[in-house]
Amino acid sequence: MRHKAVVVGIDGSPATDVAVKWAAAEAASLGSDLRLMHAVAADGTASSAGDVVYRAVGLARGLVPGIEIDTRIDKGTPSTVLVKASSDAEVVVIGSRGLGVMAGALVGATGLDLAANARCPVVVVRPDLAELTGARVVIGYDGSSAGDTALDYGLEYARRHNLAVRVVAAQPTGTELHRITDDQLREAVHKRGGHDAELIQITGHPAEHILRLSADASLIVLGARGRGGFAGMLIGSVSQTVLHHADCPVAIIPAAAIGG
Image 1 (cartoon, rainbow, N blue to C red):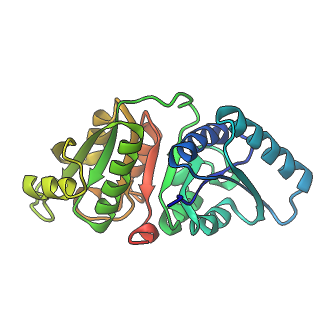
Image 2 (image 1 turned 180 degrees about the horizontal axis):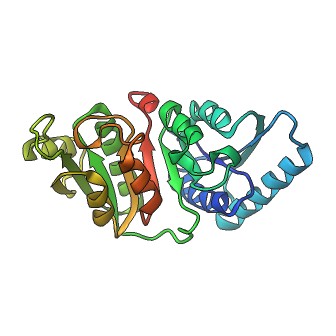
């Protein structure tokens, strides 16, 4: 069965150029169409929007010749346009700078709205990460439904890209509440086919551990909602730290995408 389209938000900035590169490679890996989405204000000009789309199409075709590309220009904020597009997307890809009012990506209010309401995974690519390197996928797991979905996404991505997997479970300091035991972690990963995954238990604030353990990663995958060490990931300091300092793209599984 053919996968849904890979959607990427574009605005002509260097940040979205890098997002287009990541999205085009992912669409080729999935055998999916690439959908380029450009949001314009109600008083935006068609000519400038057309220039942005034309340039992005040329960039994508230059990277992946023969890829099927669908282009759309919608009126509204980038958040509104991309949330709407996510209902029929495999993944939504954005640059961590650019997209107008989405400057700051998931750290800002518009990006948080996308992370909370998108109906599929959201991947954030930093503009300085032009080269897609890394040997593994690092997945944050906390035993929640968001963590389970992050496992599914991360393991499947790793299989397609022939990458190793490192699954990290966080335990808050000073409490046994929601603790993930070694057996629970192993069972959750193995039942999804991740028998070769490296399993790591950490104690304390997750951000520094995630960043350290992701130094050689190609992708970090985190659930947007959960409990224990990853609770509130997108509204606290952990998300901001990881998104600002990760040396690779970061995939967020929004609450609205769980079970979809």
